[in-house]
Length: 265
Image (cartoon, one colour):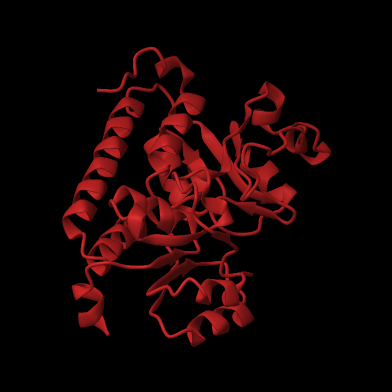
């Protein structure tokens, strides 16, 4: 099957992950997409394409009618949905990036898979240059604030590992273990100076009041100084090209004093 994947000149791709969609569009494969997940609207221009669910729940019968030749999904998944996707007679690729290195590997993997390795190299290089540029700017900051970034409030879940890496690049320090359930007590004891709320699938509708009015966090420095910020979900929770924009936002939130000196080159 690997040989056929490499030599196919045109695909009919179903993307059930916004990160995958964002990467494929950046690779120039927009015309190969025949359907996307409903979570893709903010990460890429997918107007006019049929919209489905994801690997947790989707209309697999409807997908089959589109005659896809490649289906790509990501976590989280539900076993029943995944079983139905695997029953369809087309290659199914599942992704589960955790770190920035994983994301770059996924870009190269997808580029090789659809016959666009050069485009993948260009995309990875462009993202790395942006990361390096922000990292250089952050090194001019006088301090490294302690940061708690949150991906979900009930149960409370800290942002994934790649967000912790972005926080470090932006001149901060994640003070809880990323990508796991955390308690109010853990966050209070960690004493973050900045709290970033980027709740999955919530767009920019995270509620700062959930932190500012939390009686357990009255002594938390970020709450006392009002440094609780909402970042649009897709900028931090899409492990792909949107992270470059998320990193820029983090830099400005953690180090507003650099805003006037840090310009795009």
